[in-house]
Length: 414
Image (cartoon, rainbow, N blue to C red; front, top):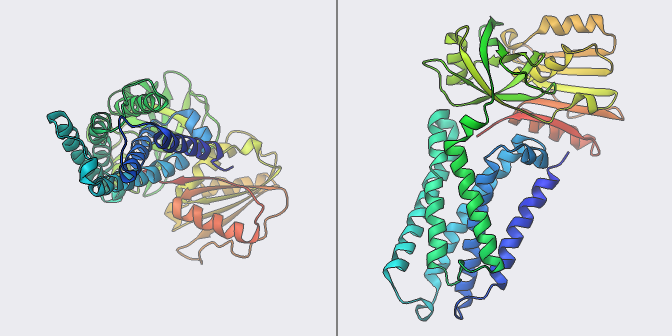
């Protein structure tokens, strides 16, 4: 399913901004370059409003964009677009003729200085955010949240250096007031209240099972039951000294809601610390569930494709009930240590005639490819794994099967 509702929402907001600025009446006649500069600046402010709104992980936004991975994609795209608009706005202002520049006042000069500081702040912080893979997650979050400061500077600059009276209840004034307020409150919420308000499911780690040299399964017993659909994931905070307090996303690999299981692969600093040092009875808090994989709504014939730890959503479904549909699973991993619950999957193939699994160990075999694979008619395809793998397989499958629909979860959250 495409992110149609989300894309329409973005287009409507950006188009509304451009049209309102275009048809608004300035306090006095201005040069066409100055008018264009204001339209561009307005698009930048609206773009950052959307950036902060998408960061809130609201369930309605997840539905509109069909998954958090799509929300994050457009969040990042809008940040880059808005930064470009900020820079373009500054360049256009430098081209405004001298006769069209208002008389300098202390208030105007201060607003312009804040605008310049906001521009440099956006450039620096967004560049840092784009190089997230080189930062520890906790440090990346700090830099990310600091975007509120240049955004506040930009809002002040828009209100007190603009040639339009944004304090009046005109269509443009109302639109600007609503979007800047919602944008600022969204950023403030994520900075100060999100972790206290959204992590309502609390509990403890009541079981630890090391499934291989780099995979661990945590059993969580919760104080209040969490309702989830098999294939979904949660954000978890583990309150143990030596572990980051920041929330991290993991797929639910089983459980009944009162007890749930998270299967975690030691890939980065945080997951390696969890693997080596997490302790029993450690308190946890969860936010979620998230995720749009829905095997129940899939066709009678399904194709599952999992990469490494991406097997966990499928395990959750398999362990919840008897298999009542035709499923062919392609499970790719690198080395036997990364083959999670292989024995369980082999047992399922012996127990259920309609379940078939293909194991692809890339340490011993060629990489999995769907370049010449023909998808059976009326099949549902579910994909889960690292982002590059998911997009690569989706492209291969669609090259020979243009009318197919693929549901997927891709591992990339910054």
